[in-house]
Figure 1 (cartoon, helix red, strand yellow):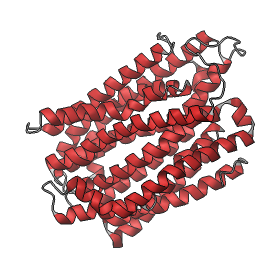
Figure 2 (cartoon, one colour; figure 1 turned 45 degrees about the vertical axis):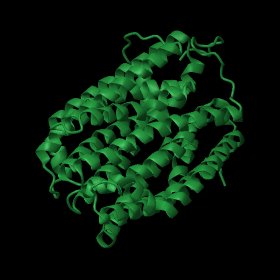
Figure 3 (cartoon, helix red, strand yellow; figure 1 turned 90 degrees about the horizontal axis):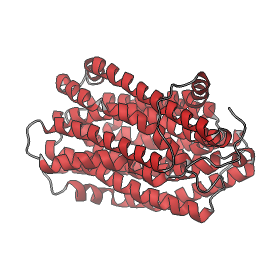
Figure 4 (cartoon, one colour; figure 1 turned 120 degrees about the vertical axis):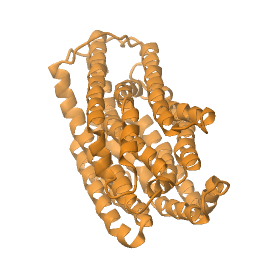
Amino acid sequence: MASRNTQLPQGSTEGFRKPKVSENHYKTFWVMVITCAGMALGLLVRVLLIPKRFGFTTTADELITALTIVLVVDTILREGAKFSLVPLFVTCEQEMTHTQYRRFTNSLLLFFISIGFGIFVLIELLAPWIVGGLLRKSTVNVQNGTALLRLFAPLIIFGCGSTVLGAFLNSRQHFKTVALRNTLPAGVAAIVFLFLWNAQNLENWVAIAYTAGFVAYFGWLGIGAYRSGHRYEYTRISLDTLRSLKNTITLPTLGFAVRQIMNRLLVEIYLVSQLGQGAITLYKCAFQIFSALQTLIGISIATTGLPDMAANDAVNDKRKLEQTVNRNTRIAIIIAFPVTLIMLIFHGKISWLLYGRGDFDNASIKLIGQLLFWLSTGMLFSCLIPVLNAGLYAQKAYGFVFANMVTMAALNFLIAYGLIQTWWILGVALSISITALLAVGNLTYLLRRTRVSWL
């Protein structure tokens, strides 16, 4: 790397000063507003439109299974790399010249797109075995699930490219541009539902719509990066950059891979699919509401707080880093606590409000409400997890991040496997809350080992 450049890189207008607390709150607020809109569209499609159009049938299970598989792959690459790439971008922008930094960014973009293309090819080839392995004990049609998975698979290419562009823009604190990720794919899918509600093979059009939404989001981020001053060029990735990636994203990405495969595939599909027809769709109806709230609160706060925590002065000054972590956890608790109470008190009414006017039977509606209740018991802790994780990412303590993810993923699977025998599908929901509580305790311990305490 070159010596520190004394001039600001092109496109940077504010230098590297630390934003005031009020500015952080303002950014967090708007990120949460945009994320909320995206979450609402996502819930509209995955929690309302899919069940209302297809019911709790094998077709709905096939559609949700195929979408879950590709989103798991996207999440592994995006979440595993996003929080670790942001500190890398912050450091490199400070230490490299503008030309070096531009080439570095372009080489990362091309490298991640190439990875996405490779994964896309593998999924296309292995789709029958992936779907068949996950659903071998269910009543779902493996052939139809395979066809849907192949239609969803191309979105991974653009998801990988969006990971780099999103981390680049987050490092420059262009959070509002990146926050539209959940809005565009779900928005395109909602339009397809609106105009093709009675069409045959509607599930295929939904799959194509999600891919189109990812393409649109990738283009949106590309325009945002260009407007921030970045210029595109073909640049091969260097050995130095590969070494940086090895040190930066290997452990977090492996951790996310273990967590997503264990939680989203083995627990939410493999175990739940054995409970009968429509069980996957029924569980997802409740889980997506819980997940949207956790993302809205926890991920939004962690995303907007990470660039400041990753700055060199914050990392070297443990006291300053501790103050930032404390501030972010307080904000998360202040927002998450009343949300948790509302979900615990009104879980039944929320379920009836969403599904009471449809063709769903009373038992299914009541069960969704019960799932919401047991998921909500761990809502506060689930919102704290990404905020506390950000404190480890800021210090590049990737070994601790990896250890926490793997440990909690294994515990969640074991707890869910044990509880599902006696509590049926409710045991899966309860396992999420128990694991979240354990994760907060473990993250608190790991942060203290780095001499940072949030209590």
